[in-house]
Length: 329
Length: 302
Image (cartoon, rainbow over all chains, first blue to last red; front, side):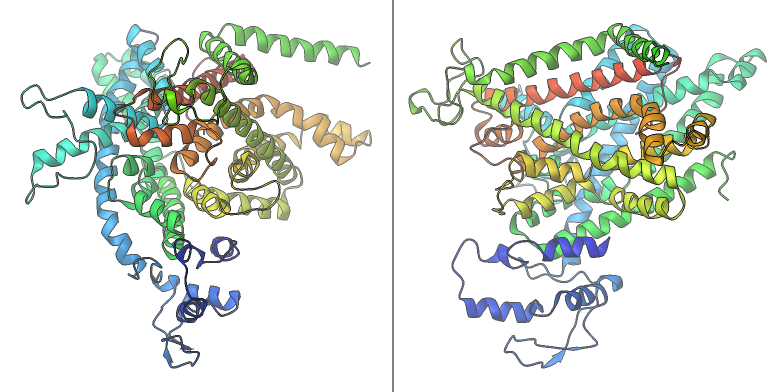
C-alpha cells in the first residue's frame, strides 16, 4: 500500500516539485538545487527506500552543490519521520501536531453530541415502532443522511449568521467560523461553545441519522428475542426489561460501529473544517492538496490508513469482549 | 423446456415491481428522480445559455423568468443546475458501470475458485478498503486536474468517474464473492458441472443471477454515493472544472457571496439533496422488494 501511494505521487505529471513553480518563474538552476537538496535527483526506488527507512546511513548533498558532503538526517516513515513540508519547510509531524488537537477537539465533541442524541431517538423509535414519532424520525434520518455536509453548513451559516440576529445586540446570532473570537483573550468557555455550535451541528447531523437508524434496527432485533419475552414473563417491569436486557445488547453493535468510525477523529471532517475555517487536519490536507505538498499528503494518508486498520482490529476486539458468544479461532 | 424458467423469472420481476410499488418512499424517489432525469435531458430547450454571461442581469433573485435566479455573470442558475445535473447523473451512472465491471468479476473469481486467487484478490480489496477513500480521491483528482491526456483533460466527467469508480468496486466484489462462496458447492452447480457446463457458464448462468438483487440495490446506493462524492470534489475545486457547471462547483462558486445572494447556495444543494434522498428511497424500496420474506429491518450492513 505504501508503494502504491508513493508511486502515485511520484509518477504524477510534473513530479513532486511541480506545485512549487506554478505561480512565478523559477530559475531552472534553482530547481536543480532544490531537487538535490530534497534528494529528488535519485532514482525512484532509492527515493522510496529513503522515504521508508531514512537516509542517515548514507552521504547526501545538503547544500545542493552536487557534492556529497554529510550524512542525512531523515529517519524514514518506519521510524516516524515523515520528512518536511515542501511549503512551510517544517517537519510534517510538527505541522500535523499543530492541527491534530483542534481536529480531535471538534470531532470528539461532534461524535459525543451525535451519540447522545442518537441513542434516545433510536430507543424510542424502536419501542414505539410505527408511531408518529418513529415515522417522523425515520423520515428525518433519511433526509439527514442525504444532506451533503457542505450544503448543510452553508445553510446553517445563512440562517444563524446572516438571517438570525441576537435580539439584544443586533449582532449575528452565531459566528460563521473560527475556533474562538479574534479579540478573545485567554480561555473563554462561552466563546468556545458559541464557536462550536454550527460546526458540530453540521458534522453531527449525518451521524445522528446514521446511528439512530442503526440503533433502532438493532434494538428491534433484540426486542423480538426469546430472552426478552422470558424477562417479561417472569414479571420484570417494562423499563427494566428495556434497559437491562434489551438496550445493553442492542448497544453492542453500536459500540463496534463507533470503534470503526474512530479514524474520522484523525482525518476530521474536511468540509466542516473548510466551511467554518477550523484549523484542523481536514484543512491541512485540503491546503496541501492545493499546494501539492506531497510529504504532508502522504503522511496524512499513511497515518489515516493505519488508523483504519487499527480501528478495524479494535472493533473486532471490542465486539468479542462485549459479546461472549463470539470467539476468534 | 425453457418454458417453466421463463414463467418463473417474469414472475420474480413482476413480484419485485409489485412490492416496490407498495413502498411509498420508493415511489416518491422514483417520481423525483424521473422528473430530474427528464428535466436534465431536455435542458438544451432552456432559452438561456449555461455558460455565456449576461452582465445586465447579474444576481437577479428567483423570478418567473429565472426560477432559481442568476449568478455573478448573469447566467440563469436553473439552466446551469440542469446542465450540472447532466454531469452529476452521468458521473453516477459511469461510476456504477465502472465499479460493477471491476467488482463483479473480481468477486466471482475469488469466490468461485477460492484458494490462492481468493487470497490475492481479497488482499487487494482490503488494501483499497483500508485507505481513507475520500482523501485519496482528493489527492488523485488534485493530481489529475493538470493532466492534458486526450479523453481525460482537466478532470472531465470521464476522469472523475474513473477516479471514484476505482475506489467503489470493493463493495460489489465482497457481495458477489459471498454469493459465490455459498453457492459453489450446491447441487445445482454440481448438476451443471456434471452436464459438462464450463466454469464460465456456471458462473454467469447459474450463480451470478442469484446475487442480482443485492447487486441492484448496491448499485442504486452507489449511484447516490458517487453523486455526493463528485459534488464534494467539485465543491473543493478538485472535481469538474468551471465553467462546466456541476452541482458541486455551483455551490462552491456560491460560497463567496452567499449571505447576500442566498439562492446561489440554496438551489444547487437542494438538487443534490433531492436526488440523493430519492436514490436512497429507491434503494430502500428495492431492498424490501427483493426480499419478500423480510420481517424485521436488516441490521446495519454497509
